[in-house]
Length: 246
Image (cartoon, rainbow, N blue to C red; front, side):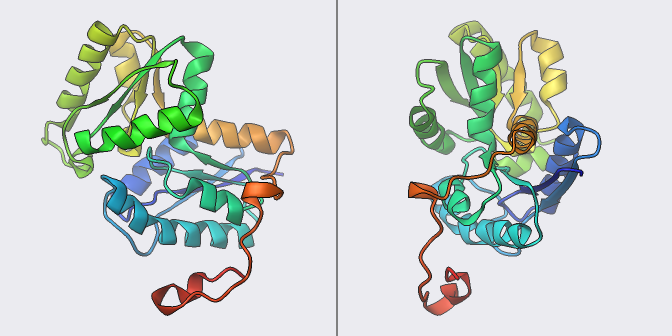
């Protein structure tokens, strides 16, 4: 039976969701079904802790719906990995964030990596994830190319040129052995950048898609003992009433 993967872009920009869907489908094995969605509510882009907080309710709603429909796994397609642990509490199917996936995959093919993201305000978030996931001894640096996320959706914005220039600096100055693209909106660029710079350039959307396939193939599901146990049923009030655990 075909594997069905629910890929959630936690922002509400549909052009980015379509790009993410294409990257996931290109990475997926023949026969794997990819459904890519955006929440019905939330920020148009995620650029810092505040945006991240407000993307999580809509993200969890998409995880809940896909669980009810029997999807085999989920990808959270934002490099901040927002709501990842909460989603794992909610889901029995595996849930993989693209930052964690990219870091794991990088260490299988390179001794060190540098992450290149969009804005400087995102650097502390990604540095936190590097430490949280235990990859501090592999990560040479987290760099920002200094353009807003949505510039990647705008032809002529110069975002791609800024990204290329920052990767060139990373290769020369960090002496890293791989580059991680620190935004899901860069998912369509990894092949060209890898050919240009001659080292592994890892897109987290593709990495997470393959890891979900592997986990499903191994018959693994999210543990429901301890921290990822389902939330206790209780009342939520006000605008969050419909998110109350059932």
